[in-house]
Length: 207
Image (tube, rainbow, N blue to C red; front, side, top):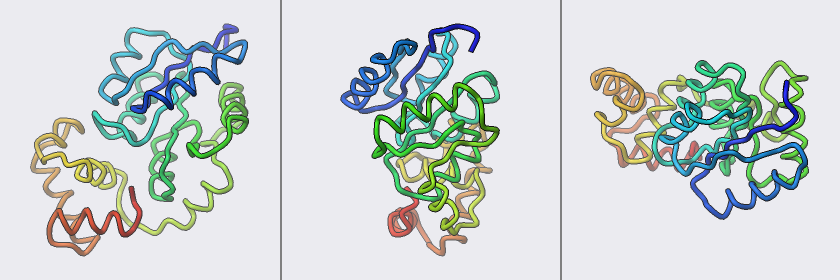
């Protein structure tokens, strides 16, 4: 970084977690939390109005689909570092975040020391690929799914209860395209309706 203070934005829908993370970060001499948001739909407006060096992004948040937002942010702001944080324990989700080009994927259950160490590694840019813990790498290796990144994005939004038209709007797709992906999901997961789809997702611990 060309400046000494690292400007950080936190995107997480749990206020207590945000506050704890903010206190931890601001206890470090060169970290400054310049923005906090509680929904994915607030991430892009924040980046448009604030100078941000590092975004800490929760996976499970209202207002969109995290990997799609992450991908867009990396394309729009190539210098921005993004650490994806998740309370999930799913190799499918970890793989999705890695493929979306997160600079690191961290589990919320990790230690404060691990988080600060990860931030330092990401900011110094010593690694070329997504920074993953050994446990996350093992989960990715064990994840067995032939769903495409787009199907996983749509599956996450179906799981949130969004209708086809809402999914189409969020992902900038036509309703017809979303319906086709929905058909493919049903076929690949061997289910006949949305209720069965949700149950299968829970059974496979995809989300």
